[in-house]
Image (cartoon, rainbow, N blue to C red):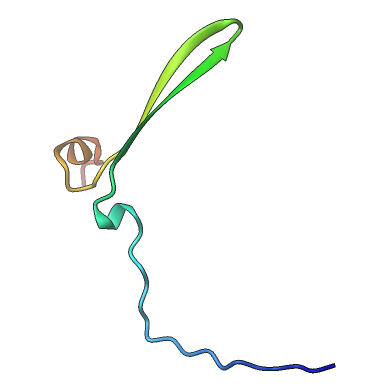
Length: 59
């Protein structure tokens, strides 16, 4: 059985998350509950946007 080891090194770099890159998205979904169709809108907003600031908790 051959075993190879690869040394791992890190420079501390971490790729930014989508929200840190200014990511924003709106999605719509139709749900049927007990035979009734309801529409749900879901938003992901940038933390620095006016909408994101309005949703932020107060210190």
